[in-house]
Length: 323
Image (cartoon, rainbow, N blue to C red):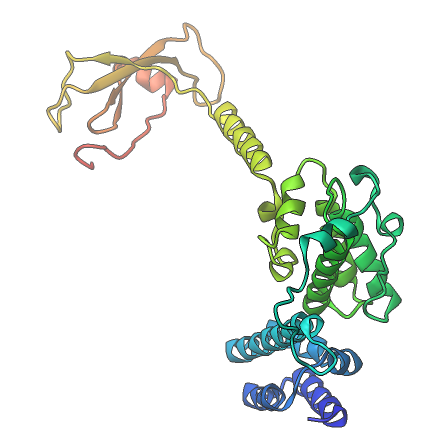
């Protein structure tokens, strides 16, 4: 599919989405793009078709969202494969026999002479211009500064990883003038330069965490194991301190529940108020019985005292007989 056709499909997709057309029409356009587009970095950059298709991942129709996600993933993989294979090819397209892509001698030679704590893309002397767009190139430099801190990894490796992270962020949150893209780059940089979480930089440079995965990790997933343990301890301490102490009851085995017949009765004394909320002398004390087998409160005062003080009675469900 030529650039002109890709632009036409791009406009058709935007129009169909904005007009709220049926999912079948959008799926048809996406299928045409999936089968007709041979992705190259230049084509995706000039037409911005990757950004437009990526927006369809948020479509409310699950079939449209799934198809858009498949297309973006396929194009991203094709571009990465093309970039990975190009450095190993000679001028005639053949791979040099018996020659590895890189050697340990080359890696040692390319290591930065700048102290690990002072490294930046400027001091390492790397060329951050990889996209032809100043905003994106600046973001690559920012990510490089976050990755190279306190490490002796070769500048070429750090630059390659920083470029891949920016590319993934652009595909997920672009274009470059989108506030979501800028905010994500700043957030990634802050997490990379965090001195309390050096394992994050190490895992990313060692390819334990892929750039695609890194740009979509949540705040909790970005935390170090030590930070998670501290947060769990703080939450546990807060829960323990927030728990109110339970009132201790006296247990009697001499009283029997009239309904269950079990001797599981606790009792406590409480000073009651009158109906208008004020104490009336002689402010009698009342004995409340709590039948553990039936969870029922009973008042043990005299009938005259009951009528004068008007105590409140509470009923609960029995944990044994269910009454």
